[in-house]
Length: 248
Picture 1 (cartoon, rainbow, N blue to C red):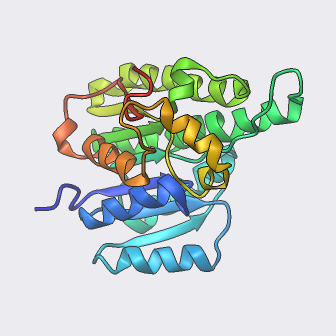
Picture 2: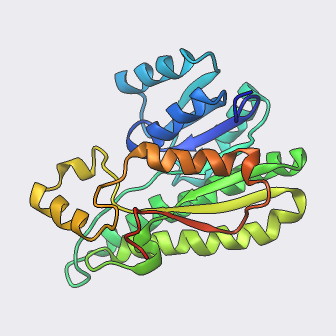
């Protein structure tokens, strides 16, 4: 039996990068998939078909996870379409990196809204369904910079550190109803976003990593699979670094 057979997973920000990697990994393990992204286009249509080719139910919804009402609406529709939500992965996120002395109020507010408020919005929206089921796994995508901080990323670091505090609090609130809450803290992961960095910058990053390579979306997806499956039934309130030893 596949590890996620019979489960329905909701993944935000799933059209590319880490979110897409998680979706593909979950489809291979038999999960039905409800994905959200800001807009639907040719890429999301292609991904939807690719996921369905694994023999699972998959649908991508246009929704802004940073909007409270939109989050509640899309979750309501997903429950109607799929009947249940077993796994929530709060993956949506952006960066607006700059030194504090140059950072604008809008750059601060936008990153906190998209990265942190979206986690509140979506968790709040799925809570009722998971409480009725008396089961669920919530996985929040933090970052190593949420654990250790990073110059030029005070807004991003603050949002990702906030996710860790939220994750631990929800684990304590909902644990008695068999709902688990964990966070993943990726390090330097090679995606479309990091692919735009200068090669010298990437080389300097890799020098700081004990395993001497950047991570892949699959590296993160494998840890998500563990946390989403029954293999982690006694794991809650934890932050798992996926960073090649960088944050050691």
